[in-house]
Length: 239
Image (cartoon, rainbow, N blue to C red):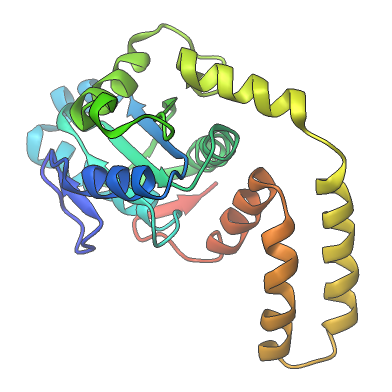
């Protein structure tokens, strides 16, 4: 697919953004998750409307996803309409949460193409890199990407992102060690918002930042999605 966004974070069939984020996370031993997205309706749309209209729709999809991710995330537009999100500093639970939010948004949204309102249903898959590997044993970047895309070949459509074996193991470890601190942090955040609601915006942001850092990753990702949801997506109309 040819990249159609003006934003520099979207690349066409290029591994540069993934390689940079992969190197950064390896150097600082940070987690890196990959979230792959596929819209299985695209081949039929291409046969009906032609390749140029299909590329126009794919540009809309990439723009919609790009508007709903963080500044530090990377978006790779891969061949045959795949989109791959590279999420630095993000564990598998955060990637799953983002996938669920994106899927829900796409299923509530219609995209306009040649006066047709199209509703698309994404399939998603999550894979994670091994940030604790020694440099000489690290898996190649292209292999990491292709392993993620291969997960989408599964005939699953249960609404949940498909997890690689490595991602599933990481999610199980997270579930086993999860405690009660996130709930306490959420309560603390609510009280802080109430307390600061009478002050100016600058004070609110400065005071909220430490509390937000204490939230668990899925909660932070949901909050980010809610904030980004206020932005209008050109070419998309919520149902």
